[in-house]
Structure formats: C-alpha cells, structure tokens
Amino acid sequence: MRILTVGAGYVGGITMAVMAKHNKEHDFVVVDIDHQRIKDWNSDTLPIYEPGLDDIVKACDNLTFSTDVRGEIGKADIIFISVDTPTKMSGLGAGQACDTSKVEAVARQINKFASGHTIVVEKTTVPVGTCEILNEILEDTDNKSFSLLSNPEFLSEGVAIADLEVPDRVLIGGARPEALTRRPRWPRSTSVGCPSIAS
Image 1 (cartoon, helix red, strand yellow):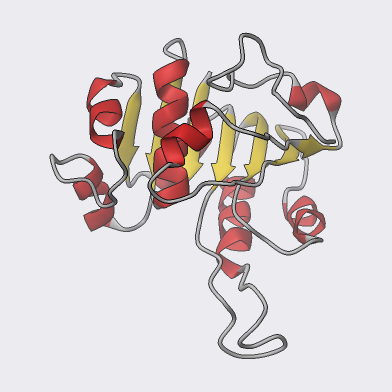
Image 2: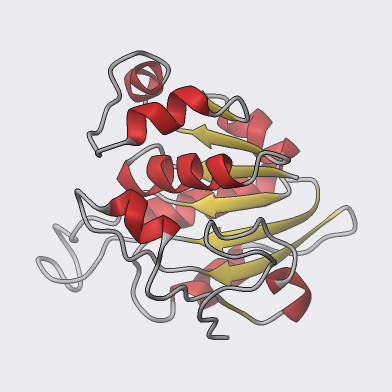
C-alpha cells in the first residue's frame, strides 16, 4: 500500500516515520505545501526535534517527503490529514474554538484528486462533528469512493516515538468495518489489531 499524510508538521512527520520503520512492505509519503519544510525534512537538519527521530528518518528507505500534493493524493491508498488546527481569530468561537478550515481544504483536495477507493484518516485534533463535515465533502462518484476514519493523536513532546511504539491507547473509529481492517500494523501490534479500538 501507499500511505500518505498531508501535513509535514510534528504529528504527520513523526507518525509516518515510526509507521514506516515498522511497515517496510509499504510506502509512506509526507506532503506539504511549505517547500522549506519539505526541504528541511530531506536535509540533515530536520524541521522538528524529537529524540531518535533523525535515525529513524535516515534508516527508512520507504519514507519520502514531497511538495507534490496533487500527484501523491492521486496515488495513495490511505491518506492521513495531519494539518494544523489553530484557535480561531475571528467569527463564532474566536479565541476559543479550533479553526478547521485547513482540514476541510485538504478534504476538498482529496475529493478532487483521489482515484479509486481511498481511506481517509482524520488525524488532527478537531471538534466533535468534524467528521460529518468531512463526509459531506468526500462525495463518492462512479470512479472514486471514500471511507473516513478518525484516529486522534496522543503524542507528547520528547517521548512521541515511545508514545507511538508502545501506546497506552490507540483509538480508531469509523462507520465502515472494512476500512478498519485495511491498514498497516501499529508498531506494537503483530496484526491489524490495536491495543484498544473504539468504533
């Protein structure tokens, strides 16, 4: 399989690196529109610091970083949405609510450029009800279809790799059971199961 994450920040970059380490039979790609950030991921000086991350990224031949968002979306079997959700600066909920506009924009790109059947995983921290909005954006057509999953992250700076490799919980929810069984192994798992699955 080809697994893509849109968003080369802390969550997207580390999650794909650790999954690539433990799933050598699959290809992992991290895309972002920020050319400098992708350039940094491809350099000897990563854009984020996390103990042990440098060694993992250097050792994974099945992990790449790219700015070709459109092209990579079209080739992906599974797409993680891992973009920022900053606090809203204006409008309803300003100063308190999350701004989900970037998440929705990525979903529109996926809807436009994906082909065949694509599993879309909402990885970013978002308010309850966001998946309903994304489901409305991801419309099935004659030549493409989508399964939407939610997989919230619980990473702590400084121990994020350990959080992924030996998680105390893994939550994955979705409306289509077949989508829940078609994913790479979680690092600690020996099958498609996880320590804890909530649907």
